[in-house]
Image (cartoon, rainbow, N blue to C red; front, side, top):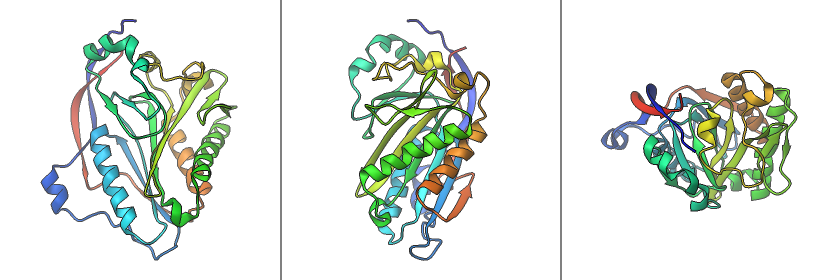
Length: 269
């Protein structure tokens, strides 16, 4: 399979230089009193993946040090990159290695659930960092909360969706459009879930992301019209917040450890 790619300029967020991170004040993770059930939601646009990993680790450390059940939710898109989770393998990438090199697509092997995924603009990445032990939640409770939030979001959009019986991934009449790829460290959740809203599906199919013989698709294809990224974002955030019982939500559209830059990225024309 040969895929031609073109270069465009795109604005996205990068981590600020390390010396500025070390000298800048940490985001206040304890705005509310203990057990006040609040969650910080960061709507960040398009974020460089490696910069997000640093941001996520910083947030994990802050949550680990606090003694409340306050949580953080990152919502963003990523420039084109491939990540491979704990259940992934080289076989998922084998058929398209030449295309990866030609398009300068980088591959990251990371410690999340699931297999290989190609992230790109049009795919919504949702990362809930929840102190599960302080919330009284087990692994099954957390996983079920993610699934139920996706199913309720789908219903609000008018999509009949279901969980695959052999996995936690979500699919509709046209195929699979949502993927779970979370992890837990010291009983704090990180990474999360990915929703194909309106990405370039030819680019998505460069990898064998589907392990259950369901066609990869998007919300736009399922709806047979362009899905609104803002509507999907609002719905999944609201359902996650409600599902996990948070009463107060603080929403931010930027983060002090990120700054906006322009970079050339490769996309399918």
